[in-house]
Amino acid sequence: MKSLEELKAIRERMQSKVILREGTNETRIVVGMATCGIAAGARPVLNTFVEEIANRNLSGKVEVSQTGCIGMCRYEPIVEVFEGEERVTYVYVNPEKAKEIVEKHIVGGKPIVEYTIGAVEK
Image (cartoon, rainbow, N blue to C red; front, side):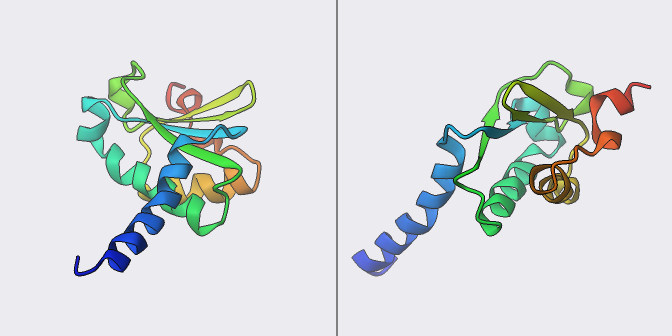
C-alpha cells in the first residue's frame, strides 16, 4: 500500500464483500465453517459463493454467511440455502458445486436434488 487513495480503493472493493455477508435478504446461503467444515474445504466454498453472488450482481437479494458446526461432520462441507421458511441442505460441496448451486438454485430457482442430504442418505 503506497497511498491513502490505494487504501480507500481496497476498502471500497472489500466493502461489497462485507455487505454480502451481513445482509438481511430473503435468500441466505449459509456455509458450515466449524473446524470440520474448514478441514473438509469449506473456506474455498464460502469464497466461491461470495464471488459468484457479487459477479451476478445479486448482493441486494442474496446474503452469504457462515455458521459453526451444523452437526453432520461426515457430510462436510455443508451449505444450507434458506428462502423464506424453506431450507435446502447441500452436502459434500466444493467450489464447482457452489457455482452450479448459484446458477441452478439461486438464479434458476431449482434446487439440485442430487447434491442434497436426502439424496446422499438413500
